[in-house]
Amino acid sequence: MKLIQRLGTAATLSLLIATPAFAQSGAMLSEPSDLSLLTLGLVGVVLGQRAARKRA
Image (cartoon, rainbow, N blue to C red; front, side, top):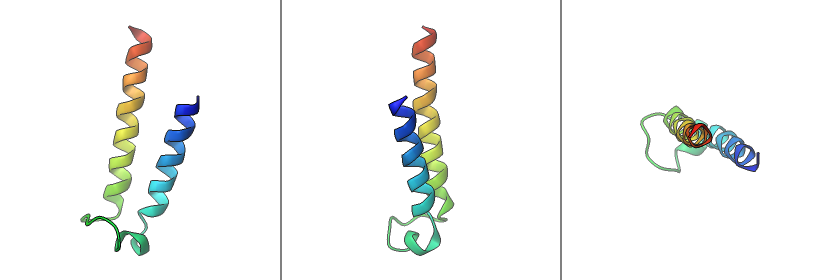
């Protein structure tokens, strides 16, 4: 449960940081939403791996 809370916190922070005002001083991405999509993808991979471990 702690992992889900940490992933939720990380996803929330990435959504807040991905706003245009903060994105200008960070890493050069084509659009601020790219960081959000990357974070959501990584969260999906981690959750998928955990679900696969529970099934095995």
